[in-house]
Length: 347
Image (cartoon, rainbow, N blue to C red; front, side, top):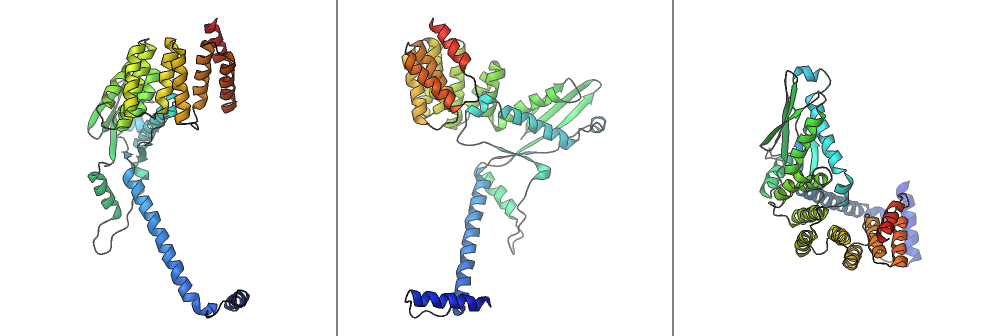
């Protein structure tokens, strides 16, 4: 029935458009089916290549269940629960506002719980080799071997220690309570130090500048220019906080040589110049930040800083335009305190 209907449609098209020497539709079904099958195979091949490429490109951090004493396990803190709580601590650090403001081009490591890990168990016919083993081997060749996180909880009388290993880098941290929160917090820092030091550095800038400087030094041992850029920007921010504006400018200039199109650089450089009282140079830096990345979701902060610099420079009408732009981008935030502070400084 369907074939007859399709043949009628086909015949109508042949007559309508004067198509000659064309066989009935039913005789071309095999050819059409072959084309569709070939197209499907092509799509599958393309998707497979994309999946394998992403698999090879993405650095994985695999968390194993922790070894936990039976006494603590009875409280509901199993080995898997402890590993999950450690991941939660890391997620909190990564979600810090200062951390999310700086978005590296490379999104960083993907954290996986080993008991939920998806493996490619497909076996190559006649070889007995799985696709997963090939991916692991190739990742090792290109320096993307998964990082393994393991550890144990040790309790001696009233003292509880969280021990963690990051591919052989071992450390242990005391915990004041059986919930392990403070010990896991320190363990999370240890994990980030060896897996995502740039994330750790931006987090520590907010909570512990001394440790931030130590992390910056660790970061600068890496060869990736992007990590170097962030390290020097944070170093410059710390020096600016200490009112060492010349030292801050020196660090910002290093980043300018590494990555002259770094949006985050020019906003922070501008803030340093604003604190120094060099308003015209500060305006230039904020302008460059917007020019480099006009669609950056954090540009409302740049416009607020730009408005403050213009206000300090006595350009009230221009400053008002920038503050309006800030409110336009983020109507959910009250920037009146920033404006009032700038006006008080002006007086």
